Image 1 (cartoon, helix red, strand yellow):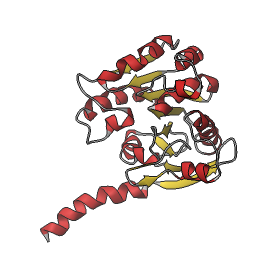
Image 2 (image 1 turned 60 degrees about the vertical axis):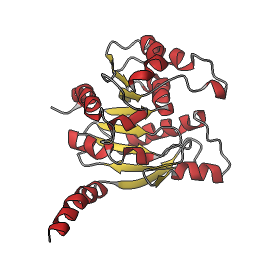
Image 3 (image 1 turned 135 degrees about the vertical axis):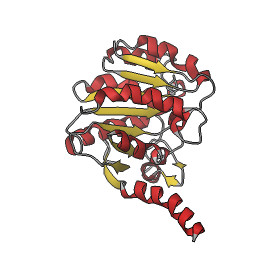
Length: 250
């Protein structure tokens, strides 16, 4: 009996998270079908976070994070971009479709997926503030496109950005130059030893409401910093909550 009770204690949170998740699909700007997981536990006027994953991964990066963001008072959409593969047992369906249709799957090819997700959320899912969140290469892309959505995007959250696009023909300062019109609130964080990757990008952001966080030591790359398996996750959560608190409905 005790074993059954312990099993239920472990299983119930998983069932609860699964109950809050609805997988949806919508077209990218080039009509490629995008798969995303919707975590909507609040009214449509609740602030909404769009979650983009890191290189080689999928929307599964946010299976642990998104329910916690729901608890904090946000609705979320975790998106499969066409540049990615699999994480936490979740296959990137958008990337699989792109490969099957022989479409490009580089980091830059994924820009249209980010833009399509923002437009889709604005039109269909969110009546309140919209926050875009990126991890690794998508952390850079949300900074690059954030200034193009004035009046739509209320803030940008960026986990481990960097100048990742030289191999795709962009300059070594592509992101740094692209953020010159980013005036909304911005939050940047990373592993402690990644600071040099984005410090010049941060300096170039003109927003007067920007802030960054580095742990006292360690940390890991991308949004994985928030996973319970990351030693410093509570440090990151405290800094993130402090930033996101300004967008909650009072």
